Length: 142
Length: 409
Image 1 (cartoon, helix red, strand yellow):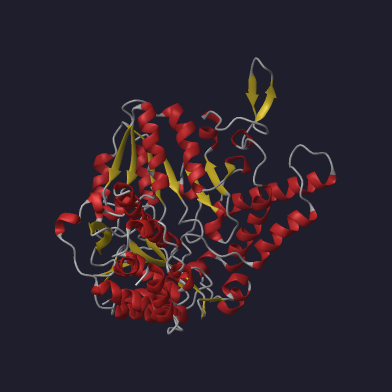
Image 2 (cartoon, rainbow over the protein chains, first blue to last red; image 1 turned 90 degrees about the vertical axis):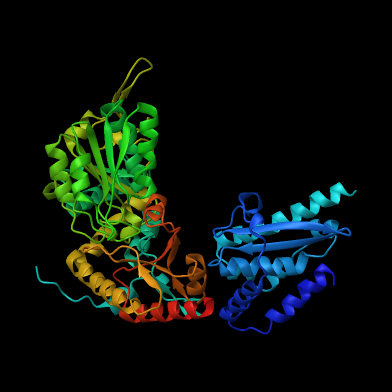
């Protein structure tokens, strides 16, 4: 699936929810399903700056596709859900496509209103970090 | 004085902002320790000034300037009465509590606190009552000492007695804690500090709208507060200082209004209070502030305090049954602040889910990071109550917290 197909799928899912609390519950449940990462990646080097709660992220390149792995501190469930969604959309794509992705789903599912402005700062930091990985790896293999 | 019951429905009808839905639910505004909402009188006074008599004050000879000047000075008189200051000369307009503390650090601090001298603050201080002193200590080589607190959130007065020495020049403590609600024994602190030869600054940001403030009875040297936390406009505050200290202090900012005569060789400064009010002040907000003071006086501070205490007591008992919830700040005497953490739940997640239910609370460290560290936490969720809040709203809060817990566990 392309990045946009993944985004459209999320938009379709969120259209099922009328109550914003149901959207939040969905995000929380995604966070609960996130596979834990190895302790060696839970360091400041992999910490996403700008998040109120601690979220870690790293990436691996396999066959010119970039795969993301993320985790958060156990209490930070919404943040974990958000990183889980972003991983779902961007993981397994080419670095170029990740660097250039237009993540329109965030606005369309009302996630910018779902998260507080401070947390939206965290969400932006997550996106920037992932795009940065995309950009760095695409230059390495250019 | 006998406490009278306030008709909350009537009070609420004065606050236009309260009558709205947030995320489809009726707004429950519990972030009053951050800023209170404004009654109709305050909003009308602001627009009335701009529509009727906007003019620069003190210098103009024309009618509008006269009118604006007299409204501006009427607020000073109202504030004097509100805090029982001996004279309006001792009531300085600032841009808020933070501005007032910085003014004292930059003037009193620079003049009267030197290398090796000590400043005492408490563990529960807001960053505004920490950072200006750290900056001063960096500049002057003075020493910042911190009075510890008990687990209940009360100042350890025995430790205070030990820390207070003949090197202490200033004790700077909050009247009440924004993060815990604790009301500090400022009168006792002032008495002891004076006996040791130290001056006392009380940060009244959380005190002025809830507690009885009589600067003469307290014998406080400086009392600072913000109007926006007491139903008044943002961007203005008050510094009260004893005349003999204010007179001895050098001016703060240089500019118009604060001078007597300027020549290129030498400038002489204006008398109090203008010495500390350089530049065109925040005229509109100062003018409107008078109506906020009158709003509180009309309801009666004791009556407001009784209502807020009833809300706090009810809320404290209501949330006690929530599994894993712990109240941070259990002092015997508190203003209407309910700060809490819940096992396994991040305060930010709590804040987001409460907001989706129309409930506005504050989450985070509340600009008291050292205090959070003292409790071994990164932040709390904080509900803080004002005169227009109701028992029904606390029931909504409780149900909202329970819903969030259910979603997050």
